[in-house]
Amino acid sequence: MEEVDTYYGSIQVLYGINIEIGQGELVCLLGGNASGKSTVLKTILGVCRPKRGTVKLEGERIDGKPTKSIVSKGVAIVPENRRIFPRLTVLENMEIGAYLRTDKDQVQRDIDEMLTLFPRLKERLHKPGITLSGGEQQMLAMARALISKPKVLLMDEPSMGLSPLLVDQQFELIHKVHHQGTTVFVVEQNANMALSIADRGYVLQTGSIVLTDTAQNLLQNELMQKAYLGGGPEGGTIS
Image: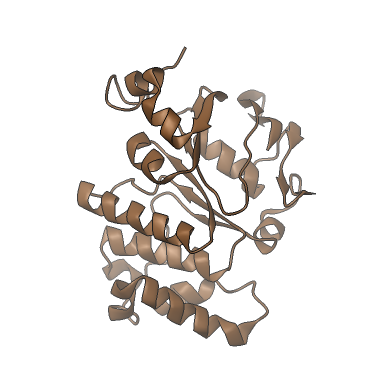
């Protein structure tokens, strides 16, 4: 993203956003409620079109393209609150992740790979999604996205609604997926967890990037510690 301004009607939500995600990186976007994090994802996916600036994937502009086209070019998302199909089985949910793929012969092998990565899903393969726990639904949402063989995996608040133990497990899985070669962009309020696995991070505040650095440097940043890392109220301000 380069110098992106995004509006909802006449109301500006993002101001001159610059975010770069290198191939093979795990990058996190941090910020409190109403900071504009979800709007960044919507802008990448084409749900919101920037009024100014560009969004590129491997050098090709994707801003202005319909969401289906952007997804077909290799952008997948694990949405906030999972949003699996509750009445479809685990297998059917995963198969939906492959609906734009043309290499159908390879799909079953990739499903088998997901079941190896997420063995809990193998045990529930023919159960409706609604019967899964919150943590299992998150695994299913990740598997469904990964089945599409994305160039970039977007994750929107993966810790939301999960117990502390499941949050730890979730970020271990994200870390594992990243180390298998997937480029990941995590949007998250839990700064400590996100930075513990990220390469780099950005901090968004009222629609503007106010801080960017390596994850290690952000963890040690005094302003970050006061605003987001336990030294002050969650979602505080950096100035």
